[in-house]
Image (cartoon, rainbow, N blue to C red; front, side, top):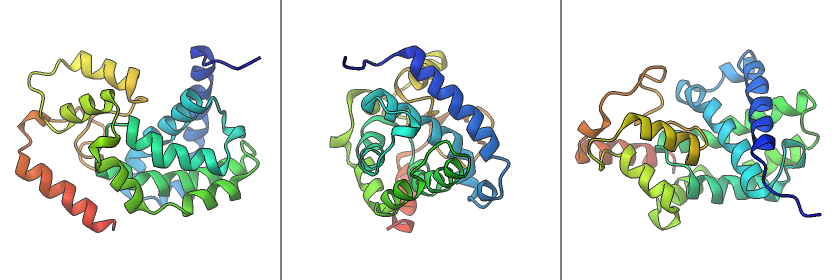
Length: 206
């Protein structure tokens, strides 16, 4: 019998990940991440788990090198609306998280998954994210909000969008500024400032 997507099963995976991530936060490995990486880490692991289950019907124990590459190279750029800072954090965060899950016996092929991650260059991931032709309709909408192109956005609708279409990843300008507080009015972000920030992050990760 062919398996089908289940909201109950999805929530079970999310809940497991929340528990595992809280443990991961207590480790020396987590503390070695940069400040932006630590700020984004919970959202990254949640998005990875959510994307892998929703589009591949895979639980963590079923991850393979091929499935990891698809989630990182295809699904993140297509589905998740976030900044370059977020995307430059995906590989280093998941690298350390897979090591942790392996030590905790939550996955049995950590070395294989890490090798798959190491085969992906950050620039490849950024290029995929920056190429708007890769975005699905929901990401296009989210990026318009994120970059301040949509005026008078209802915060409740933004929150609903984040949960329904963005795997809980918040539409924030930058994960290393005011990461634990509601963002200032991102509509005030100028085009010049946005381009300057995004280009700096892109050049730094070539």
